[in-house]
Image 1 (cartoon, rainbow, N blue to C red):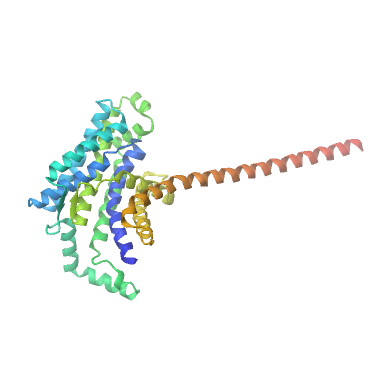
Image 2: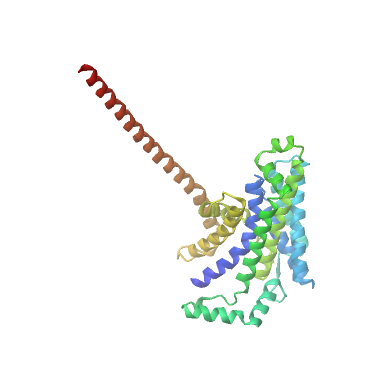
Length: 341
């Protein structure tokens, strides 16, 4: 069980980067972008084929980020210049990317077990410095020695990367361009009245979003040790689950808090899935069903809580009104009695 929790924490930090991209379109731009399912694989495909052909992990990962940026830009252009419905433009790009990703990889699956990746490089460095043995000894002291991850490198580096992206995204959304993107999602007509090109803001927002998604796909491919054409199926649902769960648990009053909540939501989501799979009657193939159940619960439970609060507030107000009426009636009776005397 603890081993599964550590693995969920590792993968949750990587998927958090994808969830931040989904947050940018879903919450900030109010754009239902299904390109995510395709651009996630694009990032993995570009990185995998470049690693196999001898390119360095950093260059391969950077190329994946640029590929995602291009995919998001095309989705934005389809919507803004082609005047295609937002949902349909994302679906069309997702379908197109399936064939493009197959073209990039040349086959449906590329193994990376024998290739040097960012993950393997960080692991090797971490082990050579002796930090792993130091941390594992510390975990043995508190009784978790046999349950610790084989290396702490992934948790550390992914925590640093995800938090760095979180802070960068928060700062970006507070810049002039970032504020224009936020305003475009809130009130497009108002933004147009200030002579701001909302089309450009949408294209940029979608490009940045899918760049983050492709970056996450690249890291997942290096983490899992392979790139597969079907690894992006359901990514948009996982991203939405992370956003909704994070907002429900940690709140989203400010951009800084909301972006941090998304990271927390991604980790919680992976932990819930890992714990659910420990149940005997559930199997690995039920992950999508579990995901759907988590999203449904995250959407319905807050509504039920709000309704319950509304009912309690109505009851409270009714009691207060009844007390006021009783007091007024009593005052009138006292006044009547005095006048009779």
